[in-house]
Length: 184
Image (cartoon, rainbow, N blue to C red; front, top):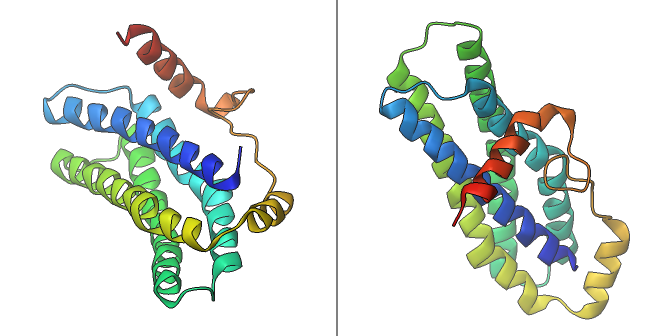
């Protein structure tokens, strides 16, 4: 699988998790109490996987292709800035979920708003990369570029979607399995 295909698969996986998160937000809006441990794992995985593995690989790829097209360069710079902003946003949301789990008093409307804004921001970022960044890179890239990048950027072991699921995401993995089994 090429680097861009791996990153695209990450986007598919992250989109699936954002869908689960949206369902949890809908439960909150309906007055139900979702599985907060699952919600915590969702936010943690989305933030940590993106910050530690996904975005650094993208940023390296962006640097590699920088200087080939002025319009693409502007988009790459914008996207890298978004990575920095998303890292901070995921940290804040993660801290809020952790506070709620530890019985902090936070108005439910504020909590729901923060979760909705997080999901929206993540979705917009993924869409931007899929519709603007990746096609722009594919226009300037050649086979030698992909070979060079793949040697420099080995695929990391995904603690949720990889062959070995990490202990940190046990609830999330179970929820995904249930979703797959329950899906028509």
